Every structure is written in C-alpha cells, then in structure tokens.
Amino acid sequence: PAPAEASGAGGDPEDTLKEIMAEADALQVVVENIRGLKFNNPVPQKIISQDEWKEFLSKSIEKELPKKKMDGLAESYKLLHLIPGDYNLNEGFEELYSEQAAAFYDTEGKYLSLIRTADGGVKGVDASQAGMLKQLGLSAMGILISHELTHALEDQHFDITKFSEANAQNDDSALAMSAVVEGDATLVMFEYVITQLTDKIPMYRNLPAEKKKEAMKVMRQTLQKELTKSA
Image (tube, rainbow, N blue to C red; front, side):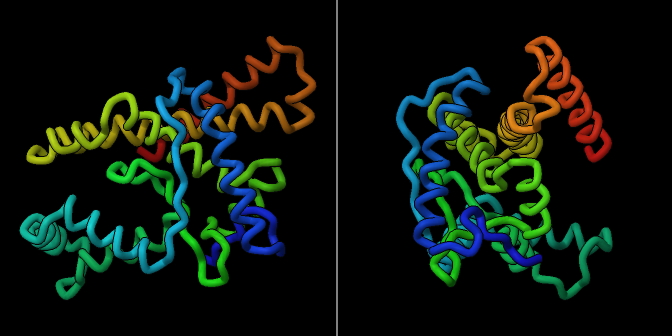
C-alpha cells in the first residue's frame, strides 16, 4: 500500500518533519498520564535514512534470530507447509518489517527513530488508514508514536534489554516477555485513541463528565472484544 504523508500533506517535507517531532515531544506528557509513570529523561529523536533503517533491521533480526535459529525456524515452517521450500525466511522478515515500520524505539540507543523517505519527508502509514483517522480528527503518526514512546517509558523504568537478554534462551519466556511489552504499549495506544476521540468528536466532547466516562468504558470494551476475536 502507498504510504501516507504523516502530516502536513502536500507541504514542505522539512515542515512535516518539524511537526512530527513537535508532536512526539508533546506526546511524552500524554503517555505519562495514560501509563501512570513519568519519564526519567526526555526521549531524544533521530531521523534515519532508508539505508540506515534496513541496516538496523538486518542487525536486529540477526540478533533475535541467529543463523542456526533462523534455519531451524525456516525448516519447521517448510515442514508445516507454511512457506514454500525455496523461500528465504530471513529476507521475508526484512521485507515485511521494512515496509510496515514508520517509527520505532531503539532500546540500545535509547531514542525514538523516524524513517526518512526519498523525498526528504518521514515515512507514514497506509494512505487509506491515515485518511480515515484524519476524518476522526486523529493523527496516524501520533498513534504510532504513542506506542513507541510507551516502549521508551518501559525501558527507562524496567530495562527492556535486561529482561530480553535474560529470557533469550527460552522461547516461552521470550514470548511471554514480548507479550507484556507489546501488550502494555498497545493498551496505552488504544487509550490514547479513545481519549482523542472523546475529546474531538462533538457527540462525545459535549457529554457531561460521567456520560463521557461511560462512553470511554464502552469503547474500551469494544476494543477488548475485537482484540479477543483476533487473538
């Protein structure tokens, strides 16, 4: 799918970049309020090129899935007929993640990374998704960044790298660790969306406090049901 411009569609790429970086700064306070934890330090931002992103991704995959483990995983998938016999699983992972990611938190560098596009802008999300969110008054990049900033907050308080390394040799423990880290960030992201919707959609914005609280509860329950269905 074609990536959408993150914000300032049709404007100067550098202006768009500045807008997103300002949005990321402001979101740190929002994430703190939702998660109930304070950042120990502001999260720095870094803009990386497509080549830098691909290099980072390649090293990350190699670290998480060394050749022996990758080969074993590929063989298992082939035996289960999940991938063709000549499929290169390592290249498949690289292609999948390189296309999907628009921002990420680097646990080693301790910064939020945004990926620069060929035209000098910042990689966004699928255009149809961005358009739908914009109609609701939501920023697609804001949603993504709230998720990644939660990882930064987790890391500052609980040291994600330490726990990841401690569970690296046990696949079940590693999966459980990943579920906690990603689940936490996903819940914060959804709470951010719910808060934004109730603040920006007139039908919800003008409700009395108690009614708005009830509307937010219904939204949470709906999201929870959808997540349960897809699990």
